[in-house]
Image 1 (tube, rainbow, N blue to C red):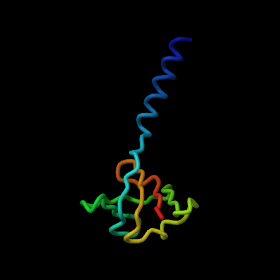
Image 2: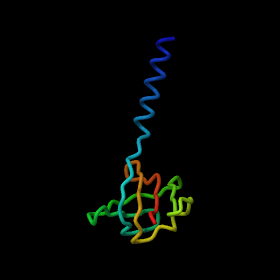
Image 3: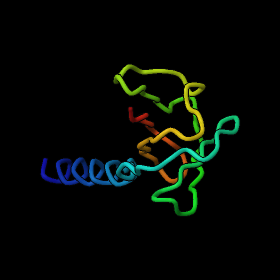
Image 4: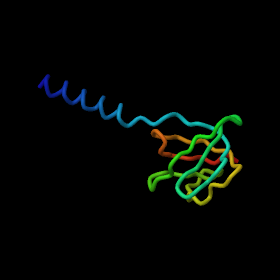
Length: 92
């Protein structure tokens, strides 16, 4: 019983470590090109994120929208797993 519990806890910790998503990065969209969006933080260099079929995009009113809603110049917050965008919030 103890061994099963230790294995279960270890597995849960490993899965949690593998599924980390970086905290949100706030910046301005500098380019939208197909399935990528580039975001610059405080006028610095832009980071390019890949928009996958699992990326959630939210309009300023909080309603889920499509990736095509993203345009250059918008202020956004991006949560990413590496360079894959998990969630993009468009700020109003």
